[in-house]
Image (cartoon, rainbow, N blue to C red; front, side):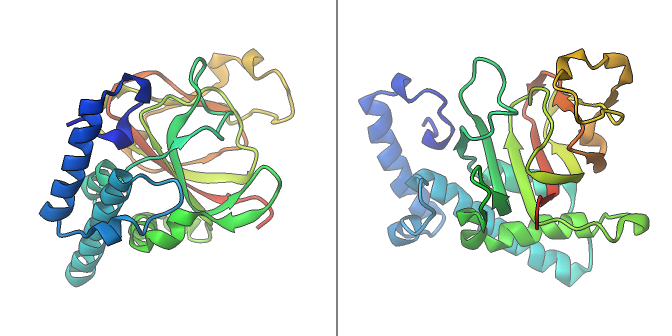
Length: 249
């Protein structure tokens, strides 16, 4: 059946689709030994199917963390991809600086601390509800930080799914960020202007010759998110994970 947590236009769904969703939810709970009570215990704004997917991501993250600890090994890229595929992304209409033209929202979630548009800093609801997912992603980065960057700190993790961010500068975080892309896709490079003065209002005047093109699927990349950057169009399935420190923390 159609997955209601991944539908982009709900006007295109029918009563038959909705009936199948209700059946699918019951079968999903049964197959994965979830209860309806568990499904109802999610964050505000989560649908029951979204909650089910996130519970499965949490369960798998817990299993991998335990296995990695027992085997004294790193979490792998494939394991990160498996969690991202299980995770159900929210429709985020607040990230107007990255949302592509002619689009009203993007699939994007923030775990950890978030600074909202009135300046308040708080833990996002999903942070409290899915702690093993956060521990899993934190371990992934901890395992790979190079010795010269051991002092890198982060308060937040941004998860993105299947959109090419338009040119922007990050405004609500300190610049240094680690980022990596996951999935089976072509294109989708990060274009990054490391010498951007960060004060010019004319981002569209920046010369492409002054940018770096980075294929983030190849591994972790440290960049300054306060400098202008965007993502090339791509084909396929593309996720990205960004570790950053919220401003004024």
